[in-house]
Image (cartoon, rainbow over all chains, first blue to last red; front, side, top):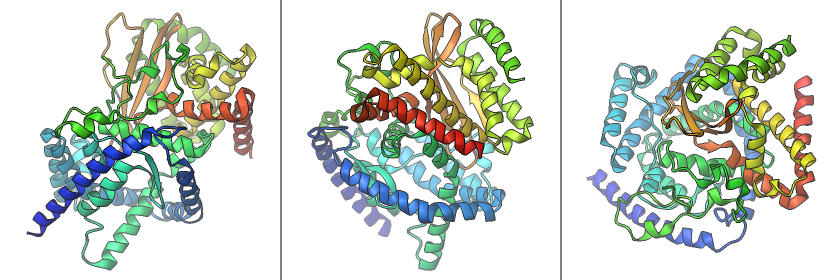
Length: 285
Length: 202
């Protein structure tokens, strides 16, 4: 009964997101600058807040954690949280019309929970069942909902209107850590997961420090490309910018690969439609 | 020793490259680089000079840095004088090499799989796909966009987890040129490179 209620509220939330997402993409077109980032001044403020918080608290904590906890234990922690996520990943694969992959996810969950001792060991990967990355934001993307404007969320970082709403309204209800009834257990697990995640990203964040001229635009453009790639499971449609003659083209606007999604499809077409929103306007043949 | 290796590369790599298919080329280089890292304790402990030597010798000959820079600088490329184009290429190359070396030093023993190439024989531009598998997380895809040149197949863009190097830098470069001009962009790049150099020496 409770589950049915949850499903109903998730569906209402979904309807709201679809509507807001469609409106947001329209809103996104109207502004100058990077069309995907109309809220850049606000975003930059939150970005430097997050950066300061990371430098002062999150990163030192993660570094301490990495130096104290041995590597095999950190892998166990990573595997444990990764295993619980597979349940929700499987549901999203189903929602995206990929039952074979959903079955793989559930097999992973079953094998890792039993043979892998409550998920501490990722035995399923050794058996060739690949870990997948899915969430409700990607499901909406696969259904044709555009991303809406880019957002930087305090403490959480890069997101878009679509991803932030689907995370806040839908994903958290399926998050077994957040939903845990005993508050002290929940808080401990949540803190451990967060610190472990940040520790896993230490190498990556060092590379961004070295590579970026402006960390804000670098992070934003990498995030938007990454999400686009995830929606298409690693095979996003090729954009025309990478073709040989594009750098010679007179009329090519500089930021074209990050152009506004074709929101017509997301607003009118019945669900699930061919994923078109979020695509660069120039569709490949 | 370093120059000796470079010399070998200059003469042998191009001749070798012409005959092999792009996916076989990527596979060969990847295997070679990985096996060197696995044996070299100094690289594993993060000796950046050693890593840079390895990248110089094994990886760089297969990249077309001028094309990469041209794509990233986009419309502003034609506004740049030949000297500006040259320094842009030089500094961008140094930046990419450093970033790439830094990424290599965090390599542990992840399995790397090069996917079989899906292309026609007459194609002059292909994408070689690969996957780095890691426990408890989704595999990271690394795609190499490659073009056929007189001296073999050359990489002109790399996409890590769907994030294109060129696309990411394009916006950064465009903003810099808009705010401080082409010379300003060159200055920013070289400043970043000098800063990192002095950091790695200490």
